[in-house]
Length: 285
Image 1 (cartoon, rainbow, N blue to C red):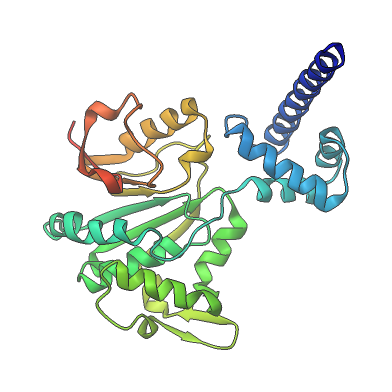
Image 2: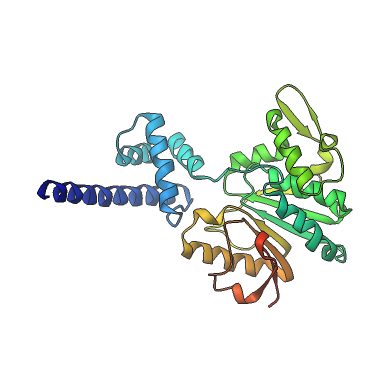
């Protein structure tokens, strides 16, 4: 029993030390780069830290901290590690199908449409929305602002080239999302990549924006931010929800990921659910 208590005591001290090391690491990254990960979900951050330690053969988080402080390239690597780049075209197809059915008819009445894809990563969902709007005859009067904190992924997104081996899954998603044509009509392919037609890119503006530290930059009719907020603490989620609320036009629409909700946010009373199970909301106040 005494040995077990000693082990539990040691584990508790180890966890405290690791938490302290992570705090120092995130503080250093913030001071050196301006990228603020201090309110990101700690379990997610910890996984990414330990993955980088394994890749580089570094035994302690303090060892990471030393490299972050003294090696600019390593600092950039850590920032990339913490960036959220998991995405796919027409991800969760039922969301896009519901958007097509419930939101598009309202957007038809607008003389112009501004859409913000926040945390767009490599751009797959941005291209999905552009294709949907083209099929619905709305692309020419729409500007899509695609933003992410990571400049490297934005550069990839702006090229519009995606691995060819993913096209089969993306085609299935497209059809389930209510696609009207053969998905292959939207791209040309070689043995490595599918290159989407430049016309799809015409009304997309890619720009760096950090949801944690940057402010609103326009008024939007639609804001899409899916599967990003789950990596934030509840306090940071609420901060970002205030940013979205301030950025939405009256009666504007907000689309979140299937594991995200407005239910516990201070701004919830200003919205109504349009398609609750798909996390599509409309600002009503």
